[in-house]
Image (tube, rainbow, N blue to C red; front, side):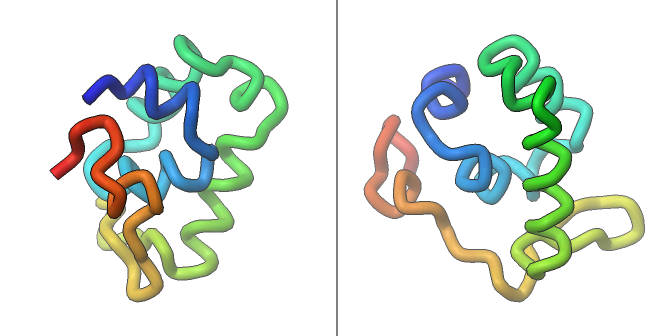
Length: 85
């Protein structure tokens, strides 16, 4: 699995849903900075991240982001694309 491929080919929301519970925001910011800078410069990354938190897809537990009650695996995960198990 290549995170670079996932970032380039999947929606920002799906990438954040998949990686949000395992990566802190700084790592996600860096990942998009190197692979899809327009998501950072447009403010989309921050807006999508905040939206996922508001909708309960991601949840903040004492500073650690975890899967929220409304979390659902993105389609590319359920289809086992990129060799994801």
